Image 1 (spheres, rainbow, N blue to C red):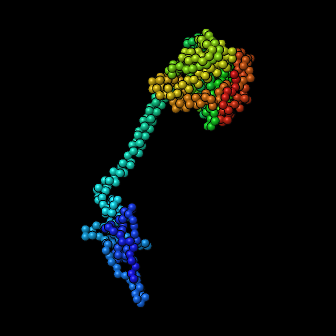
Image 2 (cartoon, rainbow, N blue to C red):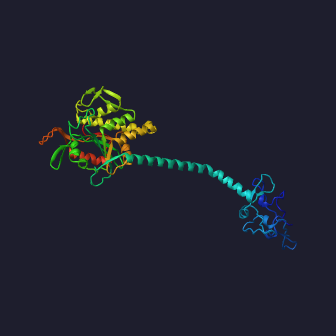
Image 3 (tube, rainbow, N blue to C red):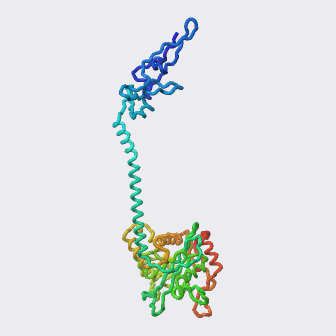
Length: 438
């Protein structure tokens, strides 16, 4: 007998368009077109095999794809169009099919409708990302324009002076910060008639290694130096020999190349402190010093600009003299750097403007430095004066050294210990804390 077909299927859908949720059956030999008919056979009474009759109830374009066979190209109709049967053929003809959940035939979306639907879907998916990227690009551009404008403006406010040497570069980034007492008649300075010329009353070396802890080290103003056979205190070098000579002396003491020099007028300290609304300062002694104008009760207090300036200048009422004054100067500068970089200042446009104007008007920088170098200095200063920084002063062997040249009492530095100190500071291997003199 001839083999009976399996599970006759109901409905008019061709096998290639059976919905995915519908039950499937093995295709019948009567469903396939002639070109794809399986050769079903039966035995005759004599035992010979004979092919079963073939039928072609479906057109070739809707026939199922048999295993190990490639589908035949769909025949052209009289109008020259191809009949598409899903998947690959539909992609070639540009016709989109929408399958339904029942057994009804799939409905194609022809031509313009199909393209419009696909485009709308793609736009719907792309728009959120495009809007986000566009907004981000605008923010970045505006930020860059603002930053460029501020830097250009700041560079235009700076005064430059030749202060660098031609010493070979060293790995760390270094700044020489000079506090200049201009003898302008304000409290604690005297006048040019009393003491001719200016004195570099505050000398600090700021070092930022490639890795490790930043450092801020004071050089006592009365440190003894000898330049070209002439004895002098280091605070007189700039006025008597020149700023390049002062930079050279600092490089000789530290063994490091000085990359940037920043000179701050003492009068500028008062303006800067007032611009940021004062700073908190601490000193554990009660002082009423006539020469500096400091009237201080032991403890911590909020200081305005005038008080912070007197706090930085006072030394005759300090039992440690110049060493103590250098320590208080570092405290003032550290307090200014901490508050100036705080959100309460940076996020207030009016305060930031006052700070910039007050600071830049009192600064003089070397011939190569600009506003970007000052910004880096501020960050390094804040790091050095924080808990992970290294602060202190140079090591010395005699706090009351009196050379035969008669220049008075000087501080005799310990050359070997200071060389080793800065070797560690520029490599970033020194532990955080306080170093050097008192």
